[in-house]
Amino acid sequence: MNFKIVAVGKIKEEYLRAGIAEYAKRLTAYGKLEIVELKEEVFKEPLSEKERLQIVTKEGERILGQLGNRSFVFVLDPRGRSLSSEEFARHLSELALRGVSDVDFVIGGSLGLSPAVRERADFVLSFSEFTFPHQLMRLILVEQIYRAVTINRGEHYHK
Image 1 (cartoon, rainbow, N blue to C red):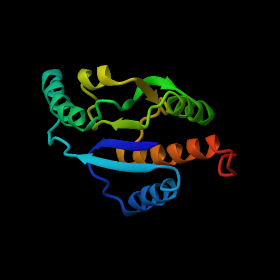
Image 2 (image 1 turned 45 degrees about the horizontal axis):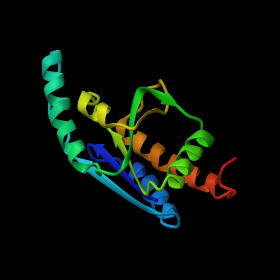
Image 3 (image 1 turned 45 degrees about the vertical axis):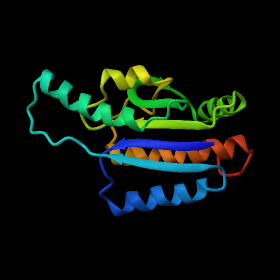
């Protein structure tokens, strides 16, 4: 399976880059992982709702331009549906059985996602009602993808 993470913003902290690189390396045995970092719009707070929408729309256009036409798209959003690691693994397994080979994940910017990106989603996924830094979320996502593929292969990593 080919996984792509489309994320707004760059990873600044070395410890996060190292963690992401470690799980990306582990994933090479199971499929391809591509991480696309998109430019985050610069803004000054406070913002009006109109200004916020303009920013997420610009970021959303960049996101949509990176998603595959035939990809199954997971959009990460705290208002989405929560899954256990086992349920997430099962979902990926079912996609593979249906012949889906490209799975894209979207992590928006600090102001959220445009309505167009949410509409493109095949599944809106929540990892928690907590708010996580977007950079940390990328590490958590890569680890959960790795965990899911090891669950599906019956390997020892998941406990």
